[in-house]
Amino acid sequence: MINFLNLVINLYMLAIIVRALYSWVRPDLSSRLARIVYAITDPVLIPLQKSIPPIGGQLDLSPLIVLIFAEIVKRFLVNL
Image (cartoon, rainbow, N blue to C red; front, side, top):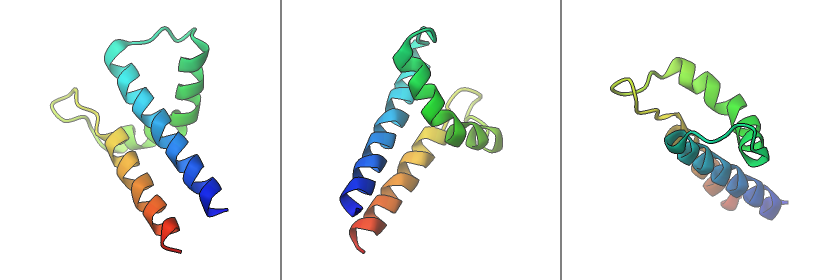
C-alpha cells in the first residue's frame, strides 16, 4: 500500500513539474496531454495561486510549494 501511495505521489509530482514547464512554453490546450495535466493539477494549484501572489508579478511559487509538501508527505509515509 505504501509503495502504491509513493508511486501516486511521484506521478503527481511529475505532473506538477510538467505543468510548471508548460507555463514557460504556453502549450496548445487542445493537446490531450496538456488538458490532462491541467485537469490533474488545477484543483491544487489554483487555490494556492489565489492565496500566494506571484513574486515580482511573474514568478509563481505554487508548484514549488506543492512539490515540497508532496515530498514531506512521501517521506512521512516511508517512515511509517
